[in-house]
Image 1: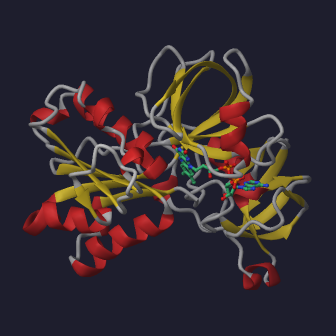
Image 2: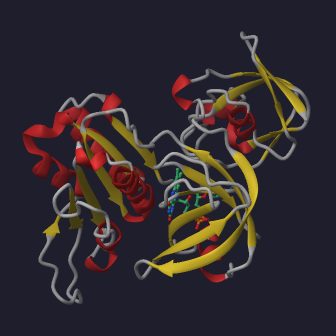
Length: 338
Ligand SMILES: Cc1cc2nc3c(=O)[nH]c(=O)nc-3n(C[C@H](O)[C@H](O)[C@H](O)COP(=O)(O)OP(=O)(O)OC[C@H]3O[C@@H](n4cnc5c(N)ncnc54)[C@H](O)[C@@H]3O)c2cc1C
């Protein structure tokens, strides 16, 4: 174990040699700043003042040339080789709800959701403890680095973690999951992570916005609202943005929930229609942020927003909610799927 001291503070934490600085700090219950855990967002930047680290991904896009020139590094992509002293600004909002735990997980089942999204169910020996909307990172055989995947199920004592993964063309982790992992195989699962979890203490109605592979955490939030009786006092508007008709999904997962059609409304939209779509798509065509604006109308301010999906979709919704309509940022929670 190495000791990581925080410049300008009395705080320090011990970090296992196999852990990133980010994971080590979160395991210690500290408010390490982060968003994606995948080297892309740049939120977990720090300065190394003393000590030595191994950089796991040299070309991580979360660092600019300027950052590199200033010797800044990403806490999610550095493992300590010695005791270190670092400069980093804690963020209380990132303090873990549940300290992440790294453990072995066994693939127990798979299930097709669409032509390119498959559910993967894993089981761990200990309870699956997380908040609905959070994600875990998976270390897969033969894949460099870890990948983040959001849970679609609810926390449970059986130790089950369900993920809904989209196959990405040429993608290392997604294709390994689809083509090389079989029921009974073991991987390493770390988590939970993430701040876009359901706030049960709010009285506002909820809008969930999922784009593409962003389905899983929104389904988990819908399931949590149904299972905790929240739907009695809060309604749920569930938007799903797909590329084409055959990419639309979500309704089958939601319609088994009590209140579907009344307390839960499902609004799918496709961004393009194609000749071969059969039967012809008679639903909405257009970007999901425009659909949200159209349906929520004058009531945009009265809701809590949860969203997950590609960064451009998240940005378009943020522009609509915050820039155009001044919805307070305390009502908006999101994960960008880098
Ligand atoms: C918070 C969060 C939650 C997500 N949830 C889901 C989900 O529920 N379902 C889903 O389908 N997808 C989800 N994703 C996307 C997922 O993590 C993967 O990016 C996606 O599956 C493509 O991975 P790939 O390995 O197949 O593709 P690749 O193109 O091989 O890799 C894609 C990403 O992996 C990271 N990466 C690449 N190389 C390295 C490396 N050497 N070391 C470390 N990281 C590297 C980068 O961030 C890159 O953008 C989520 C992403 C984030 C950030």
